[in-house]
Image 1 (cartoon, rainbow, N blue to C red):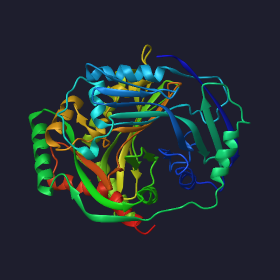
Image 2: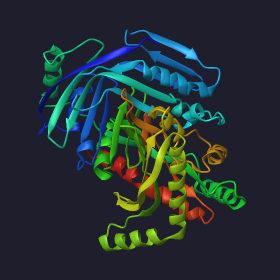
Image 3: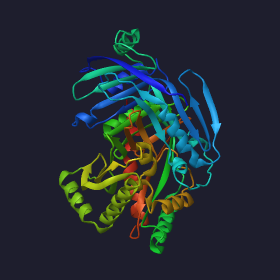
Image 4: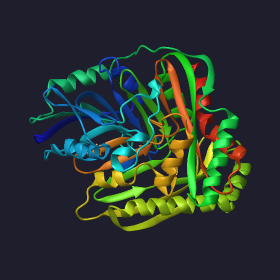
Length: 471
């Protein structure tokens, strides 16, 4: 592929009256297929930005063995690989064609935004998953785009950066900056209502899921796996604007990774608490979440439950197992791998999680995409050993996962990576919301207990859907 040097320019304005949601609502009608990424964690200067991406001008999309490339000149190419595992090299080649020019960019953002579905593991590992027919989830396995404009809100400094990217040098006098800022200053935006249509459904009955858990514990008893994550899918029909559900869930369940990706024929949005992987200056971070208990709404009772989960042998053994898996995954492409923090408790709207932080430094001869591929999917969404756990998931879940358990975020042209795991998230397509949750099955798992854990995890989404009706 031809090499492209990417130039950028920006203007900076005061953003004390601008919110990511408000700005997105003003821009989405002008720019179809806009993406929104936020964080509710503004205490860190490094993670204080929210981004709105407008006007995709290049992209990569893969579905099974077929892939398409949208080029910067407006043309597109369509190809097919002989083997699924070739796709990882194809994507590497696509990303490597872009090179960021040396120009001032206070956000550090210059790269691709998009997602990787759970089934894309077949691109990175020599594993074959059974084909499962599901038109609702018949979406690309990978989809990443480069955008002409990015609005970056620095919550730490209350500043907005309007950025433009091109293959030729730019300056801040470009008329596009004035146009974008005038669109942001529109006093009012048209908003639409949201309503539910029909009742919630699932791809498994309670009994069917409990039977799957029993099969999972039998695999653990036989020594096939130490743990396997089995999930359950839910669907809810709706009418109106599903952006109201996003607004609701970001309020009910604020998390470090908030996102709303509009792809036209489907939308993907959510509030994920868990990092897939971050790479910055050749330093990689994975932060596995393992160990979950439902919050009570009472501070003293929550403290008691926090103490119980930290002393629960099942939860501790599960956490240790997944921290070890994160260390092993990182060690495939990194050195000096260590556990920086271990089993910290973090509070969310409906649950308390135990979280650790595993870090490593990129090995010579490896790049950040190698790290991403070698750690996908997260052990907390698959199990250990990962390869056998993926096979058991494939045998026991009737529907493809698609978005659930995949990753969503950013690949920088400088080698940086920041992706969240797609959990606590919703796929909207054909006036149906699809959401999913899983539980880590180990030898001592109770089928009823694991089913209840799933209910605890989807509680925030169910509440958000109900609350969205009132917006």
